[in-house]
Length: 542
Image (cartoon, rainbow, N blue to C red; front, side, top):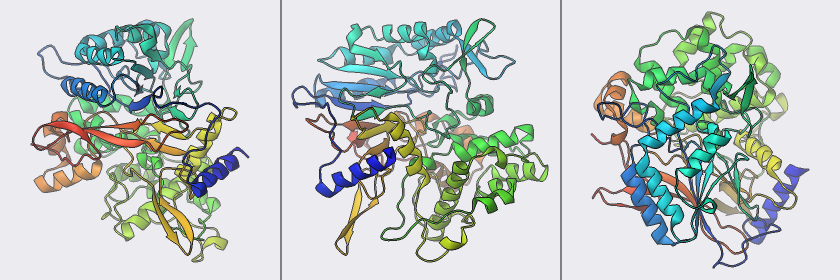
């Protein structure tokens, strides 16, 4: 019923041209309204080493850019902005020290250990904190800290309090979202980091209380994805500093394993394969590749399950860097039972992905920046017999199902979410507006942000990372141009050489209901001047 209400409301709004559905409480005057700006995934970490060089773990090296950005942002509309730092503002997960390592892999930092990590981060990023504090003090601005998976320790009381104190502003100017997300006063805009979406490998149980008590001590919990890959990422980032800057974070690990010449993933293979299949940021996109009166096919899940673990390996394209390792694990019998651990929605999501890749590569459609459109296609999952005819054409479903369920869980009486902003994947949504078409007197949303089919609201948008990032496709192109191996490319590239663009989401001040969110970039042009832009358009340098 709740899903039906979302769909009906969205369709009515589309038909009447109303935009998002009104809520019971809204901003009533443009003078009192506030602009909302969402920045995700700064990952301020350990800073420089003893010799003064950037530590390989440090992803945020952009204090000067941040300070200039914040001044420019405030000058655009002085004194009335809610700046939402949407998770992973602080890198409290990755560190050189081992005070948060235990024999029980489910246990993370205690509160004192997390506080010590935050102190080191704050000491390494005094300029950034000063710039954020200056922004919060200007006019009527506010800053909100939303915890992510890498700074979930902010939910420890002393850690959160210390982070707020570091802004050095009056208490009403900086807030911590202790419920794990931020909601506008009228209930229409919801912002969260994104790691808590179901199927995410970095999802905490019990959020926003992500803690485990053992032997009388409270620890931060460690999600299964973190337990699977964090040690591997740490080990490889020391040699390949940009692997954390790939937009699709899982691609960094793929490149690193390829660069080291790994030929066997050993006992870690099942968990790694599951992580790489379900951490992928293709899940954030909605692509209506067909329109009209077609219906989606129904995947024959019984036939899929009968394929066993071979189905999972076949879900990786032949050009996936992890596929040789997955194939070896399959041949060694290490993947037995893995399919049984997946539910039907997991299998449907993989079948959706396979169909999308197959169609895109057969038609050379450049639908995703992390997917080479010229690569080998995948084989589609078997369909049920009644959905094999021409009436049943593929279109994207798993992303819509994922976000519809999440939005339904967020409903609060009459306050229906109109705009949902998330991050976490480091990959900004590549579309910035709805693409509609009218045929035979009917209007179709061919490509849009809403998970409601053929509607424009509610809007879901990923703002990417306020970081220098690179897509796997861009990295592969540079590798081909330079005619080097994965290892040679990763060993020579530094974050400073990546495109000088930092993405964020902006929602302008509104009276009754928010307009469409805008994806913007803080971008350095070819003339080295910095300005706001609607796209990046820059490549790797050096």
